[in-house]
Image 1: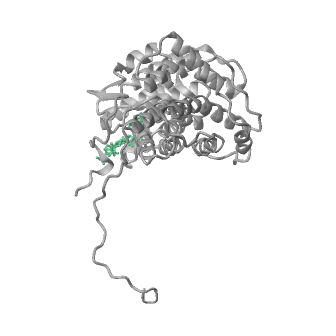
Image 2: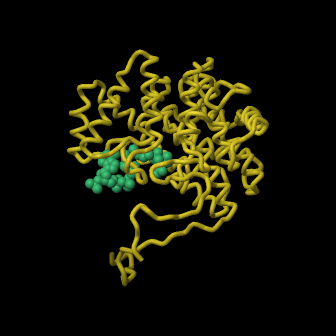
Length: 370
Ligand SMILES: CC(=O)SCCNC(=O)CCNC(=O)[C@H](O)C(C)(C)COP(=O)(O)OP(=O)(O)OC[C@H]1O[C@@H](n2cnc3c(N)ncnc32)[C@H](O)[C@@H]1OP(=O)(O)O
Ligand SMILES: O=C([O-])CC(=O)C(=O)O
């Protein structure tokens, strides 16, 4: 038995949710480029869950459900007030989602109907949890969700309690579409492994949140912003990046396990970043980002991934950088839960083997002789 490090190239599941072929990403067969331009996040979530785009009545019903279930149990908000104000926001989200399960009497019902409803509830409650913590840690009361607005609109509204700018709503909505699913990425795999033991959807999502948190995966968007802030000015790009590369450090937001010729989502986020910088009349962050890209591509042949330009986009939307990865989770919740539903439709325990490289034929030594 020979191990494949990082399971690279191993096909570990069948799935009809999203595909990556020749550098093209599609959800249910629809090219992401088209969805990014034309679909709302609500339509995208429906597409991932139900396998087709919703008609008007179906979309209205989903939107209504998102409105109906956006509030979270008061007890969970009260618990959040006891979390340390400085807690890592992904750890907060992981804990709060896990707590939601305690107050859902159907948490352990693994029927398709029950899990679909829980996916819808989590989709609309996770933004509420994130926005609530962002306020609680500043000593402010959480803002109750609005009725009949999009997930993107509601999230921005709940952060500040003010009506968000329509341009910001559209930008966030598009970012949510772009991050919604991505075949067997690490966090989705984690969700599938968990649910394949016939655990419950909250456990699957909690596993996935913990996996997304790491900087080699979803945590890279926050790490990119830390890097851009450290760079600070255009003239510092070259010395900063060259030093990192000389030290064999990774440049966050670059490289990908599957895409070797560029991530098809990155160009949309770059466009958004450019447009927002024009609207703001300040292109510093965008210009630094472009220069970093030019240098990393010329020096290492690495292209930006989805996390690179999302950092400048979210910053220009006025979002604190430790909410970037939680925003990724808002979007990817749709993909995680679609994969959980798919896994349960034709389930088998996921249990690979390990190539043993340790000692053999050892004897037990009594403690007094060690
Ligand atoms: C939503 C997402 O999860 S997208 C990915 C987000 N993560 C990041 O942006 C973090 C930075 N990128 C990386 O760490 C990697 O490119 C990953 C984790 C995305 C992919 O990892 P892997 O497929 O395992 O590639 P691996 O890390 O083995 O890299 C292969 C080679 O390219 C180099 N490399 C890969 N990415 C980078 C990078 N961002 N900066 C510098 N060098 C890199 C590695 O050092 C390695 O070089 P070597 O062969 O000389 O040792
Ligand atoms: O697929 C991956 O390995 C990481 C990624 O881009 C994603 O999860 O969106």
